[in-house]
Length: 148
Image (tube, rainbow, N blue to C red):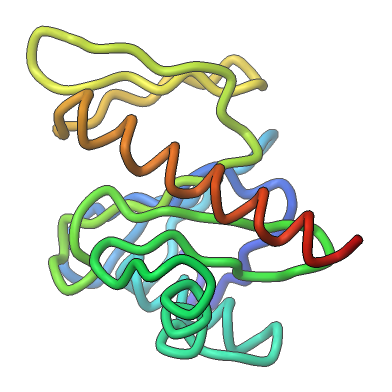
């Protein structure tokens, strides 16, 4: 079990196991980390020179979104993650926009298919998932246009 983890280009998702332990899925690895998912995201933002609060403020300035806001963890690699619920809740997972192949509705919840073949079932509605993906895609587009 790791005590720290920095989100990187290979990170696909950060999933809560319980209040203080998370599962991190990478393209070729899986780790158990001794922190909740939002703490890992905040630590990663700080590693790249900001904080989760700062990244949320950045998203709000760019898009006007403050609730369940997608965030840019690191600009140059376009590491954009979105929460599946309010980050205040221990049930919040964080998903990498870059690794999503497609997503679909299930009878109870949603499924994300990732580019590496990983499949993740989430207990959130398809509409909520689609909204989060679209918001993250919009944030990516804004970031790309600002870089030009």
